[in-house]
Image (cartoon, rainbow, N blue to C red):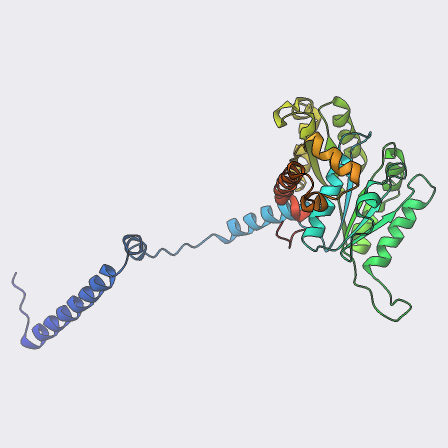
Length: 333
């Protein structure tokens, strides 16, 4: 069958073809002006994806569950533990404190080791962003007064000059050796529930470990009375060997169970390392009571300067992935 088109239809058809040709020519010129990768991007078909409401809701619920324990509260209490002395608690604490100072992050640090008060010794007079307080944790009621003091610093009142001190939001407590039972007793008095519900304080426990089985036992014991009410960071001190040599921790079936339980509660347990500082450089800092920053600034021993600078850089790289549970979420570490 022959289709007949009258003159008006034919003219309209020719006009439409001309318009289409002009559009295609314009598009070709425009595309020719683009780079190859831009051309490919512009030629991709537009696809409208309609996500099913039920799937979208389910995805949101999963995301919310994952964020339950790991999102950072407005206020953070970091507690450094490791059971017995000698595992590197003070070294990690000093590194964390130096990181806060270097980034001008306000912090109140509490030195509870009266027999060897490293924080007071190294950072006792360090400046406006860093307060160091001393606590005799073995004295009855002292840890309760410490908690009361935190509350006063979170919600400060005008001083004697009617000036309002800035509120504090980050606190650091290094537990001394042999203080586990005192700390456990305090936790069992519902400290964690009170801190979270009444004062919006989230606790992070940093457990510094060596390669011995006792370090694994310390973590398991902590979990037995803290449960999923805190965030956990396990720090493998590389002074004791390479990361893969911490087999007693990595191969512990109970540790794996704890990780799974925490994961299901939306609170993953994070593993990081602490770099080893050459003994020669460590001894120099210790002998002169120098902070890491002062060890970098000194010009007497360039070898020490180089080693300390490298150590601190590696330390900061290690804590960067967990900064959101260390009160450093808004800090470029």
